[in-house]
Image (cartoon, rainbow, N blue to C red; front, side, top):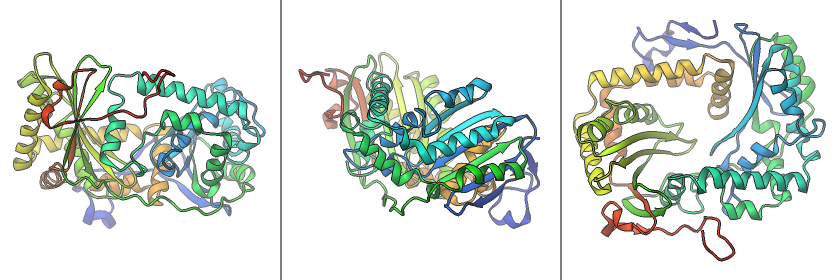
Length: 468
């Protein structure tokens, strides 16, 4: 079986879910090489495949103002070849044998991964070790500029020219000061990308892409003795990186309501409300996750049912709890139907939330969203790659590869209706940003336009004439 479900142990009874709730057991072995690289091996012979992930404890949070987008740029640079792997060979040795590879960057982490037939495990480990230890050997000005242009084009396609995609960028600047490392987008600002030099990104790599800032995870069909031998062969001689100070990140300083209007190239206005909430290490995150599903998501969720189906004032409602390592954000997004205003749907959303804060969830609501999240979580652990993701992230942020299924999962299952009601009252208060995204020249469509500040956008790429 790819995933073993075992009875809950007595040692976790105090903080665990009810006795009828299953616990999760994924066997793994963890050790550390002399250079500081943490290795997690999880043997599973259900399929003749293997997943390899290297996660670096670095993301856009480790950048500084005016030098944003470097962490994400390495998603591209890391696939341009390294000291002993010519450009294009990484794809040939993964996709060319029926596997796949990719990378992802977040505020707090960057991961690179492969899935392969199990007989290609040694090749996958060699590929990851070569770009960890020898990437800069092949990174020249031409490669860097090519990848920088690709990233700039990605920003144009996915952010600047996508309806509503600038909202989170504007919201970040509203929630935090410009110097706060969670205030800028992961992809970075266009001017910063344009001004970046190859030496800038090389210096970024030298600090953060070292074995003592990384975790290597192997999950799937392999022999542990062979895997350990290959890990030592390819990784042990990569030198440890120099010590560095992680950013000191405080919570949002927001104390009251901030109302903003952002003009965008959209046809329909949209409302975005966001509150500061809890990050990875806060126990309130479990109840906040459930709260987001109770308020939004399915057609019977509180806000969805009230605005989309009952009042029919909105065409879409979404609710999210987004956690980062140090902070979190709880958000509500509402798109009104024609004939209905942002002021109207804001009042309706506020009314639903205030009622929930008084009453809390019903037993059926709590049971339903727990079942949905349980299914989603377990489905995510069915594949080798899904397990690799979870083991790697848990080791990176909790120094325990099993944290999500031995600590998070039972705590999340143990959340009560009173817990959900409490966090709704604690976080969904007056300290929030209300952002109205409106069509160009139609600031009067903003929610309570008379009290909303129109924000300018200093980060959109300009033509030589100064026009967007």
